[in-house]
Amino acid sequence: MAHLMEFSSEPFEIRTIESTFKNQDKKESLAASERLMHQKQQELQAMYYKKIGNALKDFYHVVLFGPTDAKLELYNLLQEDPRFRETKMEIKDTDKMTSRQIQAFVREYFSKA
Image (cartoon, rainbow, N blue to C red):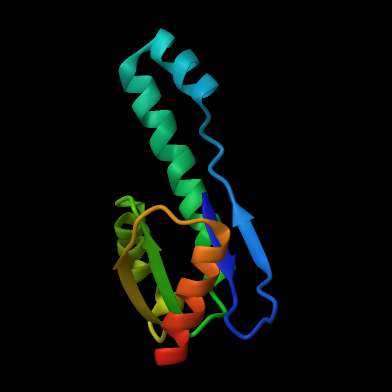
C-alpha cells in the first residue's frame, strides 16, 4: 500500500494506492502453479508501481520510505523512467508507522529540505 501526500497541504491530504494482488489471487495461482503465481504477482506489481509513478510524475522532490524493500524496487523503476530525470528522489528506511507518525515524518523531512 502506498500513501501519497503533498507537503504543502495543511492538513495533509493523503491519497492511498493499493496493490491489487490479494491473498485470494495468491491461493488461486498457487493451486495452478508456483510459476503462474510468480508471473501474475510480477504483472500486478508492475501495474501497481506504474500507478504510483503516474501519481508522482508532477512532483519535483520525492521521499520513498517504509519498512520493506518495495521502496527500493519502486526507486529503481522510477530511475529508469525519463519523466523522473529532474526529480530529486531519496529513500529512507523507517519502521511501520501510524498515520500521524507518517505525517510527522513527512513534515519533519521536508521542513529540513
